[in-house]
Length: 288
Image 1 (tube, rainbow, N blue to C red):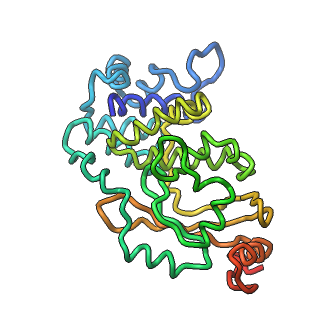
Image 2: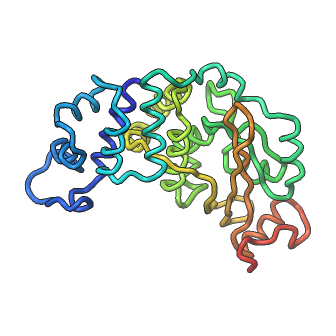
Image 3: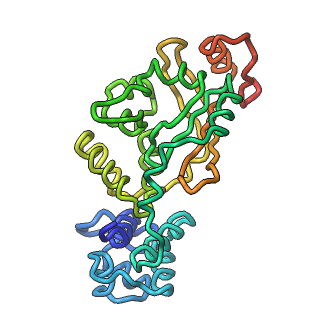
C-alpha cells in the first residue's frame, strides 16, 4: 500500500472535470482533470500540502482535511469510506490483514451444502482475489465450456480476472467483456485493504494484460458489485442474459456467494437445457 492514499487522491483529482466544479475548462491543460492548484483552492489547503499528500511525503491528514478534499472532489459515499480506510492504514492503526489471507481458499462445509441446495441455479463462492473457490453443478455446466474453470500455468485455482485478462476466449464468452473487466477490477480494488496478495495479483495482471489492465487499475475504481446483469455467449445454448445477486459470507475470510438467475424467458429456457432440467424450473427475474 505504498503511497496508496496519495495515488487515490491523484486518481480522483484527475477524474474530475473543471466543468463539474464550476471552473473554466478552456486553455492548455497538462492534466486530464483538476490541477493541483484548483483542488487546493476548492479544499482550502495549500498547493504545497496537497503535493506532499499526493507524493506520499505526508500520510497523516487530519479529518478536517480529508473532509474538505472529499467535498471538493465530490466523492461518492464509497469513495469517502475508502479514503478514510486509506488514511487509517497509512497511520498504522488498522490490524494487518496478511495472516487472514492464507485461509481464504477454504470454504466451510455448510456453505458447500448451500451451493448444492441452490441447484439448478448456478452458484459460486469467490474470494477477494476473484478466485473461484467452490461451485455447484449448474455453475460448472455454465462456466466450464467458457474456459472459466481452466487453470492457467502456475495457478492453483480458477480466477476470474486471470481469465478475463489472459484468455482470448473471454472476449467471445462476454459480449460486454470490457464492462465485466471493469467490474471485476473495481471489486479487486475495493477489497484490497492492505493485502499484499492483491498487489501481487495486480502486478501479474499488468504483465499479462499490459495497458489494458494497468490503465484501469490506475483509476482506483470502487464498486459494491452486489448485483448486476451479465450477458454470456454460451457455446452450448447460445446467448444468455443472467442477473446475479451476491451475499458476503460472515467470516474473517472475505468470501462472497454469487447466484445467477435468468433475466428473461429465453435465458430461463436455455438454463433449463443447460442443466438438464424440465422446463420452468428456473423462473426469469422479469417473469416473462
